[in-house]
Image 1 (cartoon, rainbow, N blue to C red):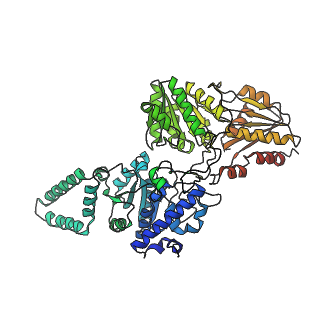
Image 2: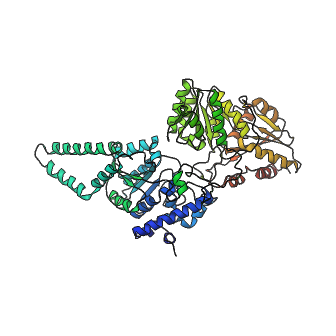
Image 3: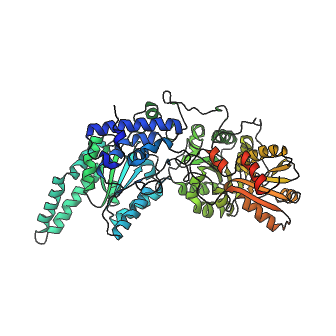
Length: 626
């Protein structure tokens, strides 16, 4: 039997479907999402929860003329399936396949590229004002989650949109029921009444009638409106949005197409800033994701029957786990250690820490800027705040890092997870700029471990250092080496020589050290003798060791999993120039001046000369040494 989904190649194909057919379509979309994500990994729970909402939006609005912006983009899989990418969906997050996030270069239906939180309302407002300035007619809809709505940028955009009285729709996709669970029935009832044409017409007729009463008409009408507003505010959870100039409507069942379609039809015909509040269930339609939406937020390939991931080397801990366990060990002996995260307790490995030290754990929500300044003030008062954050999200707090932490030389630790190539999440999440944007800041120490054992020592070093320090470490599992029984400190700025050589010297940082060691061993078979230095620190450099070793070699190559522009290699080049070292051939290997696409990390490392095999080829061909 032919599936309904087989006939859907664009949103136009769902316009004439019945409610029964739309419900069947939702089931088929869920089945496809679960099947593909179980193989490719991805963001499962949020996309499953937004299927009916996506169908209803595309049935009522006319995309791509009307523009839908999906905040973050975790919930956009159904949107991709409905907008001409059904046949490509099996390539989701794969090399040269479709992105896991909205991407303006991928489809005209992706009205704005997203990947980080709380940007959709700002982008939507920009599209609205551009539309108005061009005298065009179309609808603009921002779909934002309840978590993202708490981000400062989203609140700034709401404030601005209300001030401009912008003709736009914000759909609040509330999948935690955190805003209005206690008064949902009353607010839903009142919202439905306010949307009825008869109610709107009655208000307009009352205004016309009352305002025509001589002398007291305007005053009488304003009094009536004031009473109406006060009654509304007492009963509606949307008083906050109303106070910003938005018409608040909801909450409605976001997983009920029959309820959503008439609501959206009426909302579409309203004017001004509107906020439609819908409640959806994360993971809907897949029991394991319904039961544990946090676990199934972002997943690696998993077994559909059991819900368990199928990753290998399960006995090797991830860097994230090593970080969380080590921080607990240190915090037991140091009551000044605090852990801070921006809505990423699980992702940054702080679950156990938060259970053992709840009063010393601060989840600030999606508010990275606030978190960094908050940490600075805690450090000012003698505490040791550890800011646990992904590399790509630290970008959001750059001014606070400079102005509030480094300028004042406050001892804040930045534990920077997901540094380097992240993989299938793609350009918005690759952590490939942190060395570059941190290195130019005075007063900060930057270090990166070669393996999980050295990582533990660096955590202790960072916590004990009396100043700003950034500790960057990669996504994924460690090397699998034996851990030292005791945590040791590393002298600030001290590099180490791992292998002596004669012909060429590798100077590597972080997770590029082991590939360099492997390449160096393989080069021995070609008659080349390569030395390897584990720099450990990007800033400060071990000037004494580097000066001595660089002078011993004619050929130097630096390696980093970061953008070459302004990165670790640049630091070595600057050092050689400062030391006036002559007669050295130097090459910097890192990531090119482009945004790195989505693919498995192994594919990307091979493509950009960061795997052992490619390192060997770089030496053979670029330096013409054989």
